Length: 363
Image (cartoon, rainbow, N blue to C red; front, side, top):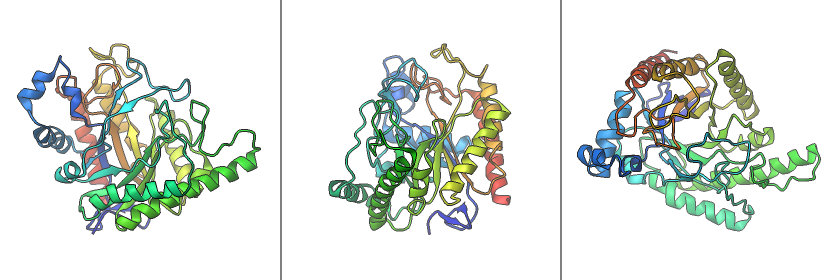
């Protein structure tokens, strides 16, 4: 038995309603700078100990039930807010955890299949032709990744590309060479290219793992999602996965709800995973952050944003952006750079997570 979609809802291997509450960007090198490596050595001393006594213990203690996308950006854009709408940026990311580490964590988890290097955060995207070589590459991905997880009882499913540039990349490049086409021709071309992309990778994954969910690309909801891509994706993936960052207002939270509801309707009424969500406040090492006034306010916002979706049966997941705060790039951390939780935030998150999980089981 695996996690599945039943009657339009995400269910666990026992068939019970399941709300995936995940934490993203768990990378131990945030604790290995010269300023804090002593903390790493004294508390953990090995990656295995950090996974067991740090990440997994924290997730369970804070009411999370899913190990989210583990990669963390480690270079590029330091000290700046992320801007997907201006000049290209190049946020180099760490590798995701190995299959053995993900499976050994002993809790539900997601894996990633990086189909193409076309992320909005990738300053040097590679929009390669979707030809026979692409099919061979996808088959390799299936052998290298899906075959490693095919018999795992804890795998939720496979994410594809993180915030793919289906809309024109900041560099001006795109997958479908749409420049100069009228609207109707652009939509036809985009649909055809996206269909080839999703059919090829889905076929490859299911060749080696026919049972687990394909969670799709992690779209950038704040930038928008082209309808032709959603329609093309519909036959090939099991959920709609969207990164979406809201402002701390009811209006912004309603906009998130309405955007997600519209996009899911365009891709066949699939369950929706909010695959990356977060907020921030100025801290000792990120004093330039303009956001909420303090960590208690972050905790309140966490609950209010989730509450905007909780009554929807199609709401399948809420994955938080950031574990340990980096002192330049990652400002969303639940822990400070010395591995200490921001208690007003984590206490509130624990309460919200446990209430949401209980609510989903009952409704």
